[in-house]
Image 1 (cartoon, one colour):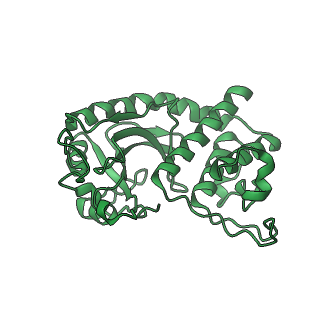
Image 2 (spheres, rainbow, N blue to C red):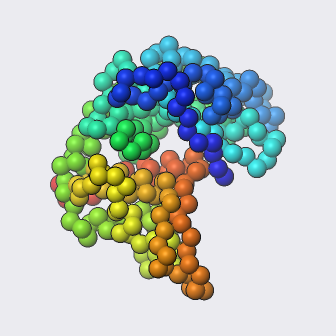
Length: 288
């Protein structure tokens, strides 16, 4: 399933931050944020708190929406109630982590496909990466749609701020660790296996459209380097954005592989992001 692409329409903020999104921009990017009733499949116990009400409460608490998207649905009956994801920045707190900023990621739906979920994300301005921090570093908070109060979501945001020093410590550790080429290649192979649901490395030649070295190709000079942080960001961007190809590679039937497709599903995007961050953590734990 696909999603509407990120939007950053709104008032321009300071250079270290993304543009804030006003409600008009949010409605263009993710109309389901403005649902005023739950999907008909939900029971009477469901507490219908429109996502936009939570957005307004977060704005009052200093968190401003800077990106939004929603899942496309095949069943038109769920249109307007589907899963959506919003990212928020907070200018009143120091959320800088090296060359990146910690953001808050809010996921919700009104068709039963998601509770209110809060987790930390990392935005790297140089390449607009939208990395999500793994749950071992920042536990995801899920708030069910039963007796829900918008304040429940606000209360969790304090933990995003509290997690910044720990996230910064991890990023600093990644930046200070230079990786030998075999380790970088092993990281890229693991990323390909995650992306294509491969259990054995021997299956890469059959199912992956590119080799590991393609994932290690930086798209800009700012991403060049063999440290763990640069390697993570290059692999993450290539895996999520796709577009890579290798016309030398062929399937078992002799046909060429197509290009790597962009990851568009919210669940797959978040799962891959967190898995890649966790792999980086493991590498750092083993080599530092």
